[in-house]
Image (tube, rainbow, N blue to C red; front, side, top):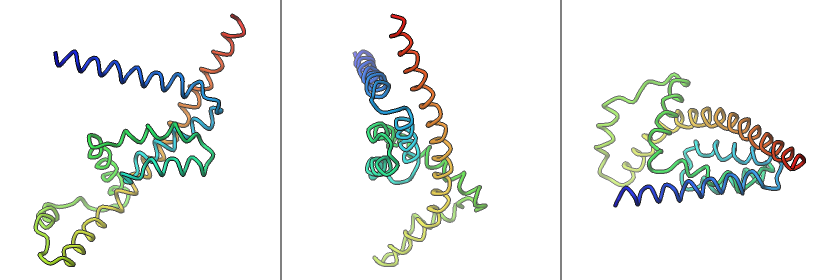
Length: 174
């Protein structure tokens, strides 16, 4: 019974995704450049540690750069509670190695579990710990985000242009 429910939901979500890609993306009035740029912006923002603001950032950057605003929003949903840790940890590791920083030690973790008792020292304690991981995290996120956004732009642009060209030829022949 449970398996049927899971399969039915999977079919529903895959149909929605297919309909979004085929109808909303490939048949949109925007040129391939605007659509591909919107997807690339969505991928880049997905890899930034701006959880909670990602959709707003995608819409703003898309508006600023003249990209399709709608296509990037669902892409940021790739960063969700199930994917945060692997995405951001790998970004942190890459950023740490680029900056040449050492790995966080066991002492760092044990200190993190024993914060000061007073309110202000606790705030400064957690802030300093956050700043120790923020720089490598951002460096890694920006590097991976730019790389994947570039690849996304190229692939999406080629796919859309090829699809539309084939569709145009099919209409002319038929």
